[in-house]
Image (cartoon, rainbow, N blue to C red; front, side, top):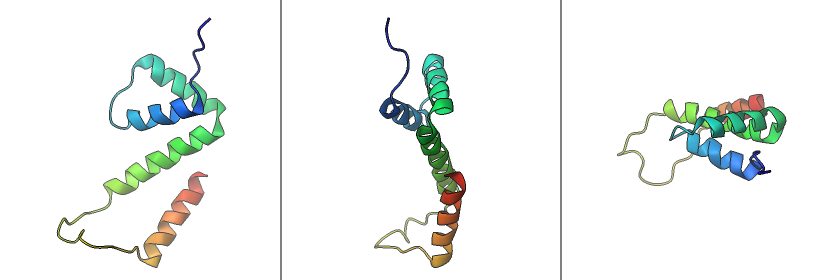
Length: 87
């Protein structure tokens, strides 16, 4: 009998891929089942979703992106608080 469950490594790859490309239903269901059983992969999924949401709200000015940039203390605090809330 072929093993149908994905490993954590497989799941993390499938989750990342699913952000860009729709996965087949059988992969989607296998990932969902794995996420119900594995708190570490579920945490990874929540963090990836949070990072995606945060990146959508960031305005980027191509002229301003040259050179090293540092986050303000306020932004660092917001990111830390958001990551603490999903872990």
